[in-house]
Length: 509
Image (tube, rainbow, N blue to C red; front, side, top):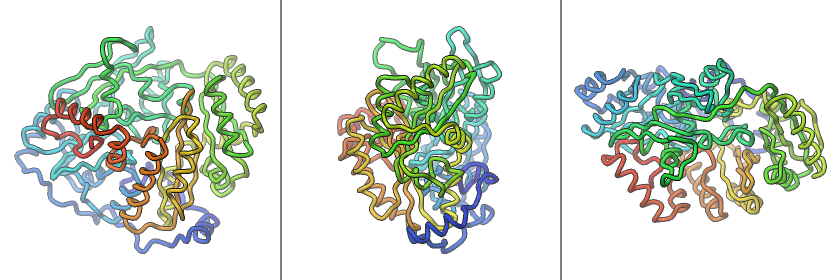
């Protein structure tokens, strides 16, 4: 993965000159003052861990402390993270990278960290966009879980699979596909994020309407904590007290390190079909999505771009700058051919009756082709001097218009685009992309992000739908759950991690 951008550097392409010109005219975007530093020119400070501790770590697991490996584990992939590393800022660089191969290795690292007082940051694909890999600690190691990369078991009777957490999305799908199954979880980070990261951040994939969020797919897990091992999940559902799986899901490595997961799987679909629909405005399109979500039929993929995102063409990243009027919806179906045909016909009838115009397979195929490409577009925008970042939130359907307007009002002077990314019977998620003239200091975006967070809470939204809390949302999360909720989280932290060595400063206010 690129150390200063997203994904495979070979897939990053420059913006067309027409788009660059438009950015300069509309937003005052100017070329960057200086080029990013080269990886070879970055010199992290000497590790703050003494040699005896590093030697002890090396007896438990593989340890790497060279400059390049440490830089490649610096921060996540938010825009502030990228801007910092592009200028050579190593303030978030780990002292070493530790690569355990077993659950017992992880327990050993946590025990040593507790004894010597250094922090441990679980590292899957490194794709956090909310400051989830920037601990508040004088010394810390990145616990890279890539060696935990096996498919442990497939239970075809129960249709579950147990996987180690270091598997990235494509490899997990490859292993399961060889057995005729899929998890069906395809977030925008799919190509680079890990199975463990999906669980730790409560990820939601682009096919969530059909397959469900990742937290809904998890039925069991093994977790290493500084206080011992948690083994959770004897069945999909249970009335044996509160479900402790839900305590770990979304905990972002602050309570423990997930080492294996058991998830629901489904047979590979016979057919995958994606189409485009146009609605005259965002309100009518949202009403149509709500109708399907509440009364059916439910497609596998269901998303709607607002007028601005449609006009810019961001809904289909490879056609940026070539958008149309109205609002573009992408509707997808996966499953057996006969079932898909019936569901598609019923969906067409509903959408047509609610003002939708069928655009055929073209827009859907275009979206499918570019569905993982938006982060590369973000890098291209940064390269020409623009500032671009994303944020997301969720609320009940009745409150969607209020929340939508509140976020836009909190970002004056920015180009704000939005789409409904995930839908449920009672609620939906709003996913915003913000573009502006270059923001030269981290504090500029910090100020804007704080204003947005305050607007989301005031408008009755949740601070995150699927990106997580990290450090960027921690203060607003505290307001969302209230003082008693904060104390509950702190009590759990004290119980599982009494020395506070796991990802300190992340999630828990």
